[in-house]
Amino acid sequence: MMLASLISAIFTQSLTFLPLALGISISYSLLRATDMTLDGSFVLGAAVFARLVTLGISPVIAGLCALIAGSLAGVMVSFIQRGGRVDPLLAGVLATFILTSGNLALMGRPNINLLTQHTLVSTAFAQSNLAGWSLVALYSLSFCLISCLLVRSRFGLMLRALGDNPALLKRLGTPVETYRLLGFALTNSLAAVSGILTAQTVGYADVGMGFGMTLTGIGAIILGQQILRAMLKRTTLRVAAEFSACVIGVLLYFFAMNGLLRCDINPVYLKMILGIILIIFLRSAVNPNQKRAQS
Amino acid sequence: MTPTLLDIHSVSLTFPGVERPILSNITYAVQTGDFVIVLGSNGSGKSSLLKLIDQRYQPSSGKINLDGKLLTSYRDKSFHCAVKTLTQNYHESLFTSLTVLENYLLIRQQYEPNLLAIKTQHESEFLQTYLSQFNTNLSSKLNQIVDQLSGGEKQALALALTVLYPPRILLLDEHTSALDPKSAEQLMSMTQQITEKYHITCILTTHDLAIAEQYGNRILALRNGKIHHRIENDKKQDFNQENLLAACY
Ligand SMILES: Nc1ncnc2c1ncn2[C@@H]1O[C@H](COP(=O)(O)OP(=O)(O)OP(=O)(O)O)[C@@H](O)[C@H]1O
Ligand SMILES: [Mg+2]
Image (cartoon, rainbow over all chains, first blue to last red; front, side, top):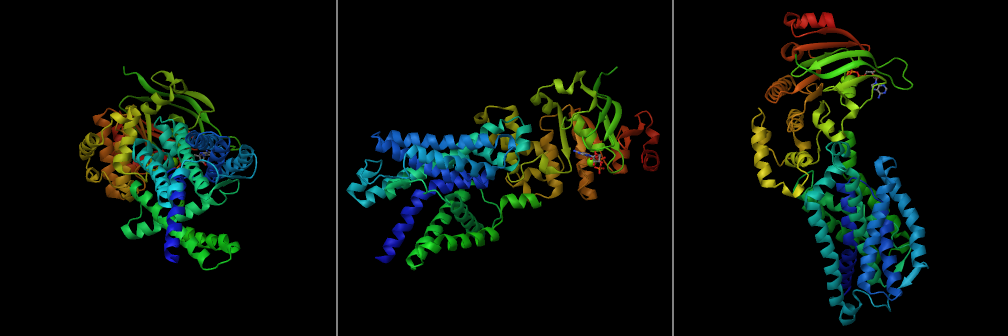
């Protein structure tokens, strides 16, 4: 019984987190930008969705609006760092800074309860937990699938080229800023998808719910990449492997977190311990950006 | 009379805060088909001259014409098609974390804006044939990541991709200097093969006088940012290494 609840906790949390992790993976590994905006877009997705639903708007339309809001956050951050004048990391922090008050303004209060609301998955959950989670899985995985197909296409090739050598890509006559904008719009809408799903499954939207998400995501992804590299005995991963790395990393992360919680660790120390584990992963990993600077 | 392809007219280059001009009063004309070797000690301004020609730097005074028109009057895209640069630093010309084929596709899409019209299968056959004309085994490594190629292979790939759509002028800044003697020689003969086949005018900087002797048909020697010495193609007897060493440094 203990084990079953542990496993279901890991899977359900991973499901809602996966789109965000994929977004982080695209920005971190492909675009080579650590986009902290994802913290903010995650909340933005949840906030827009929750607010619209409580206003009595259909959950489908609310979901679409939340998705668009997420992509607009991506557009915003790509404008902030346009032309390389603001460091990408700083641009992301700035965008999240702006979004913190934006999200609060949108929600009108720090927390919106969704338990009594009609949402995208509420009918399914009313039937059974399994039906509910299957629907969540369907939403989550189909967005992941679409993004994977996009990343495997020529569009994805452009994003990888942009992350690798923007100066060269520009000299080849490619509108690099357009691709940067589209890339960030994609990753931030994935974060919004995670936010929308999380809000519905935990039953509320909260302005603070995105805190540390990007950081955790990067940690999980790096962990997954390390494991996959060791398994495949390769130093570089291709697109399909990157996504598998995401899945593995996310599952392991939630395994660790739920495991710690069940070991009666005081939740106060949870972030500290996870942070330390993260540092260990980051230090042992081959950072693609760092490798570039050295060579 | 053949028209002047590239006309550098009393060009100077200064940087704010740098007292001595990097280049001063350079006047030089390059004709179609020339293979110009630029010599000079470290810091004499060779790379800066090439950067002026490919517009990475703008002259502080003087002007540079390509086909009788100011460089700055060309649109970005047509200029980048006409003048291409390869340096010893292959990072500048390759996407090193992508495969050989992907690098090719990215260059291809510059000339074929409809990305979806580019069929990968068809293109990989074309690339294989294209690469196999050069004396390298790159054609068997289409799906290898560029980072995992040897230095010589990377430089050969960079050259092959740079001339995939042949430019009018090819600027080579010590492109063989990081290679072992044998790879350097291979790359130089590949360079010659390409410039002859596609009638590309070439300006090459080097510290290797053997290259100057063997491949150059004109020599331009710089010292402290000024033209120190020049040898034209009617003085073939002056192209030996001892003479170059004595006259150019
Ligand atoms: N962007 C710049 N700002 C300031 N000074 C510069 C700049 N670029 C070049 N210089 C200076 O111009 C001079 C000529 O440099 P350049 O790179 O053209 O020499 P070079 O002949 O190519 O030398 P080498 O043989 O070592 O490659 C050097 O003294 C260099 O410090
Ligand atoms: Mg130089």
